[in-house]
Length: 212
Image (cartoon, rainbow, N blue to C red; front, side, top):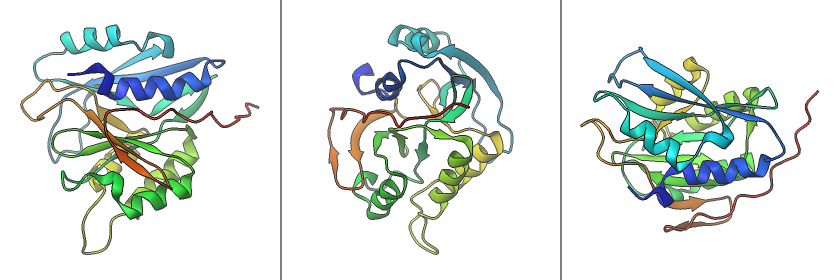
C-alpha cells in the first residue's frame, strides 16, 4: 500500500481548508455480511488533527482478522453535523472519471471528486462539505445516475444501507479475503475535465459556512 495514494491523503487535503474550525471525525471497524440488513460496526471518534498516517497504520495493524476499517462521511464541524460526499460505484467496469453523467453530477453540486480503485469497484470522495439535508439530496441524486434497464454506475444497495445508517462509509483497509486491494487513487473528475494518474489535485477553498 502506498500511503500517498490512499484516501487519507485526499480527506486530509479537503479538511485542511477548514483549519480554523473544530472538526471531529468518525471511522469504524466493521464485519462485512453480503446481502444483509445488518451493519455491525464499532465506531471510532477522533479529532481531525489525530487523522494521521501513523493513526491509520496502527488501526490497520490492530484489526481483528474478520474486520475491516471504514471512514464515515459524517463529521462535526464546530459542533454542526456535516458530510464529506462519497460514492460507491456499482461494478469494476470502466474507470468512472470519464463518465458523462458523473460530470453532470459534478456540475449540479459544484464539486469535483477524486476516484479510487477498490479492487472490485471504484470509490469517490468530493472536495467540499455538505450539511445533512444536502447530503440526503446528494445520495438521492446518485440513484438518478443509473439508467433504467441500463448500466448501473452506482451501487444502489450501498446507497440504501447508508441512508438507513445516516452517513456514508467507504473501506480504507484490505484485511479479509473478500477484498482484493487497498483503495488506491487513480483519477479525478470535475464538471469540466478529468484525468487519470497518481497526483492529487489541490482542493478548492472551502465555501463560507454560517453557524447560527
